[in-house]
Amino acid sequence: MSIRTYRFRIAVVALFVVLYLLPLGARPMSSPDEYRYGQIPAEMLDGGDWVVPHLDGMPYFEKPVLGYWLNAASMAVFGRNAFAVRLPAAFGAGLMALLVFLLVKIPGRDDSEPALAAMAVLTCRRARRSSASLRRLTVNFATGSTIADKTAIKATTITNSARVKPL
Image 1 (tube, rainbow, N blue to C red):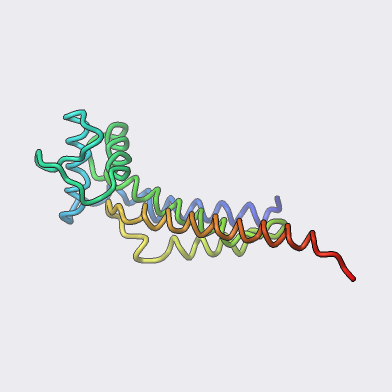
Image 2 (image 1 turned 30 degrees about the vertical axis):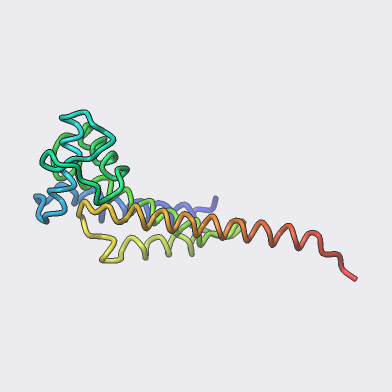
């Protein structure tokens, strides 16, 4: 790996830390969504029911349970605070940048272009909101499926081109 590639990778990680991880606990939770995404995992931790999410004792099925599990795990490790509630969403943004990096990366070429694409994703204002939104998980699954499609198409193209014989 060249020094330039190494520097680009370090820059992407540093950008992620500065924009996403450092400000997580800097402000108190504010929107109704953040309180909800903190209360439901807290009830999971208190009640022990990890299958059916509850909000104020009532079953709550608005979002898939995976996001609540991630928030509950974060709260179990870091305590019940704004940092712990927002951490899974921040990691979702980091995962999105990694998936874009892999989508743009071309084997055997310099990593500067994929790193710049990942930085562009990290600096998007919409993605940079430090909230406990679970929407990022859905976007990550969509991006992951796009990468799987690209990989399958690339593998098929390589296989078919190997079969073609020149005249």
